[in-house]
Every structure is written in structure tokens, then in C-alpha cells.
Length: 113
Length: 114
Image (cartoon, rainbow over all chains, first blue to last red):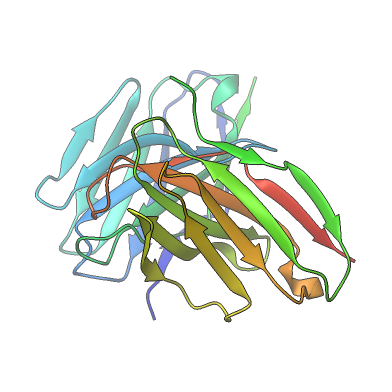
């Protein structure tokens, strides 16, 4: 069935280092992908999105890379800060013309001082 | 601009009861989607409403239903509650329906069924 999976359930990095969170998706028809950050007790917070006609998109300290050949998505966070500690989810929208996100299981990112 | 709001934030119910959760989208947003989040299943899509019509539905039993009002506010209802319905219920709004529009989430309603 449809699923979006993550390679690592947890990731620890030193403050100031760069982090990379990976995601594999299964539906070749998906045309839209989003990364969300979820802190404890809060709803997912939109970080960055990318459409299938792009392979890279940059935001403030974040970059999303999309490799459609191997159905792989990654989120790079530069110069990590303590506030970056959270669970990160990738999501794909496999249904054209509708809002129906399929989420990965999440990666817990811990920033060590 | 105010974000997505959900009420109540916490709810405790007993098995067999029913519950109604409310979601107010970001002003101007017309699409509202609902998701269930549990430790075991993660985030799962329940349904989407746009212009008071259900556009899509996930793989949940008929006990889960929803509706949307003319002001885009949405409610979801769960009848005959089961212990497994304990979860964080999240509402997300988007400017319009369609696969390439970002969804913004509310803080969720934590439902506990005892």
C-alpha cells in the first residue's frame, strides 16, 4: 500500500553541525512533498515543500532534495540549534487534485550542546 | 493572522460514548483535513472537506464522520468510541483543495477513551 518511510527513527547531532534526515516514498505518482516538524505537545509545523518538477529547494537554514529516480527525499538543516530538536516527518500527496497526505513515521532529531 | 484552532484541546470519554471535535481553519482557507496520530500507526488521513463537501476519505470505519460549515469551520464526530480511538486528532487547513498546496496544522485534540 501507500507508505512513506524514514531510514532512521532517531538522529543525534552536535549543536552547530549540519543534519540530514532521509525519507523514502513509495508512490511514483506523488507530485508534492512536505517536511513537517513536530515538537512535543504541538501539531506538525510546516517547514518546507517541494513539487515533483523540482529536485532542490532552499529555505532559511533548510534544504530539501528530491530524487525521483530512487524515490528519495531528504531534509538538510544547517547549523543546528537546540530549538531544532523535534520529530521530523516527511509527507507525500499521492492523490492528484486533493489534499490527502501520507506521512512517514518520523525521525526524532536531538541536538546535543 | 491566527493559526488553525482546535477545541477542545483535551477530552476524556468512556467506551461507547460519542465525541465531537471542532476545527477553525486559518482565515481564508477553504479546505480542512483531519488526521489521527497514534504512536503505533503514526499520522493517518481521515478525511478532507472543501466547500462543505467531503472530497476524500481515508481508511477509517463509518463511526468517523465529519462536516464543514459555510464559514469553513469543520467538525468531526466519532460514535461508539473504542479504546483504540485514543489518539491526537489533528486538523489542517489549506487555501484550497489540490495536491500542491501546503497544509497548516492546529495543535490537535488529545482524546483519551477509558
